[in-house]
Length: 404
Image (tube, rainbow, N blue to C red; front, top):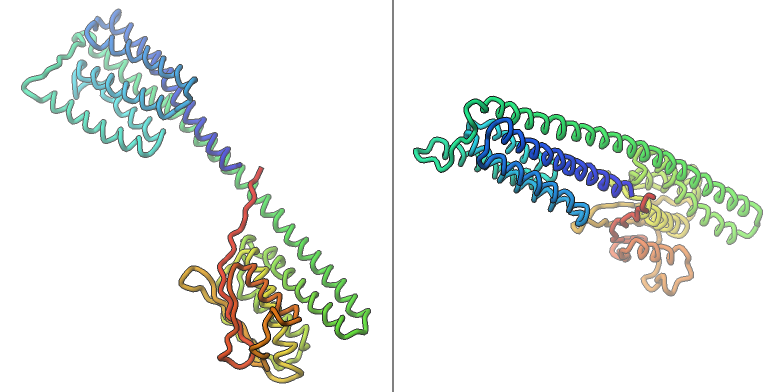
């Protein structure tokens, strides 16, 4: 919505500028026509070009109110200005006519409208100026200077005043206003972005706190039961909650609240799981090979939960008791702009015949469900000792809500 408003404001600024220039040039043209006839004694071609341009351009400006097509209005006035200015220039001295500067104003107006129109009218005006020059130096000239000798200086003065005022008083003034409005809008947008980022950080902080509260409740429930199976279930659920809370904590701590640096997250998560399941002094070695990869929250959380389940299963069922063991986690980008995760351990492993479909293990089912949530695939690597998974996935594109 903010972007749409910015585009609308820009279009409105351009429309106001074009209409203001149209009204100004139309009125000036009509006045110029009267001055040419009654004050400068110019009665051939020039005053009638001014008169025709003034009337037709007023009509063109009025018609804009009905069709509301700014480009059409601009192109009509540009073509009329081009034809009129070229004719007046030819009949008022050719390349030496002060009215030739009006041609430059068409180029300025073109670039205000669009870069493409500016380039078109720039090249067209350069060609016309060259043609005017060639006509001026030719042995045979099909037009003559119709401005009387005694009126040349006054005609030149009025032409220069018209060009300078249009360039500075109309184009310059309005462009400066548009420039200030643009930066004012930009400053307002930047302020809103900072405000939203601050609020979003606060949301991540509160979500993290709430998840930690849930983790504490699960821990209290686990302490209040003597059943080892139930206690283990509570502990597994607690670890899953902690793995999600860590994502929100890292987003809260970073300046970039859209993505997290994934290596440090996996390192912290794996170390926490080892402490949680094996204790502070264990024989577990971590081998984490993750480059400088940043993932958004929609990918980071399900992938974190998948890693949580795989590492938890390795620590509980693969590397039993206090035996030495190693956990491997490797993440790489593949050739299709996706990711390849290799995760496993050198523990006991389990039978090839056991799958998430015929197993009662919640962790095993979660691993496969989370791989599907990542819109990827998962398979076991049976060539290595222990349990190893190969997960292929792509980063889930964030759904950014529109800002009202």
